[in-house]
Amino acid sequence: MKLVYFAWVRERVGKPEETVNPPEDVATVADLIGWLRMRGEEYAYAFENEGVVRAAIDRVHAKPGSAIAGAQEIAFFPPMTGG
Image (tube, rainbow, N blue to C red; front, side):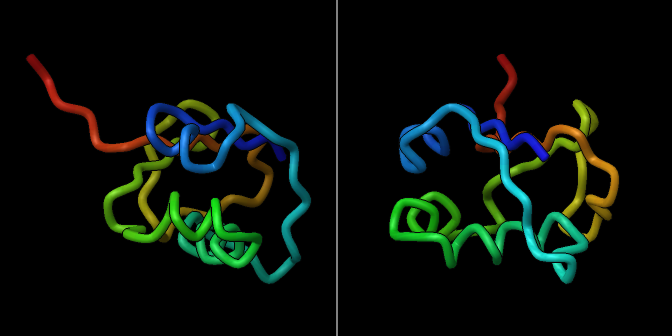
């Protein structure tokens, strides 16, 4: 699946996007974040406060418990403010 990173999440990870194949036991957005955090310092830093980072599965906002099976793209971004 393709992962896309926006704003400071991109800066911390060090890349705008990547293609990954997480293990089969990674079933939800929260599982994916946990798996990413174990991939290195940059990911641990980007997702150090996992309650802050938002996700979208195939361009639809998703909650931490949302299933990722069949997802083609998952995007991670910081909270947005209006104005």
